[in-house]
Image 1 (tube, rainbow, N blue to C red):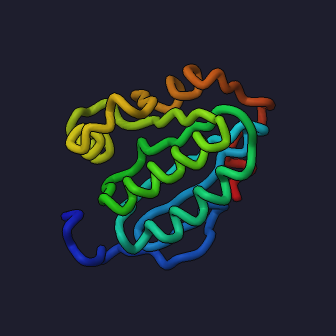
Image 2: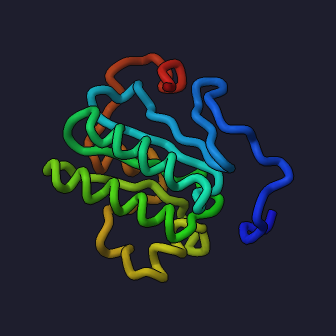
Length: 154
C-alpha cells in the first residue's frame, strides 16, 4: 500500500475492537501488564487523520502510571510529521513530569519511524531501541504478573 494515498481501501472504522482502539488507519493501546509503569503500543498509519486522537490518548496516558515509560512503535507502517510531533509532545510531557521515555522502533534503517527520526536529526535526542524487549530492559520495566498484557487492553 502506498502511504501517500489519501485513503486505504481496507480502512477500518473507528472504535474499540478486541480491546484495541482503532482510529483512521492506526491503532493504540496501553499494555496494562506492566503497571504501574506506562507501556503503550501503536501501529498502522499515524498521519494527519490519526494524529488528533493519537495526541489526545497519549496525553491521557502520560498522566497515568509512574516513572519511566515505553512507547512501542515497531508496528507503525507510516509516520507523518504530525504523528512525529505527537510523539515529541508525549516525550516533552513526560520530561516535564521528570519522567523518561524509551521508544521501540524497528531495526531496519529504512523503517518508517527510524527513517523519519534520522532525517529530522532526532535519533541522538531520543532513547531509541530496536524492539520492545530491549526498550523494556533499558527502562528497567518487568511485568508485574504472569497475566498476558493483552488481557488488560483498554
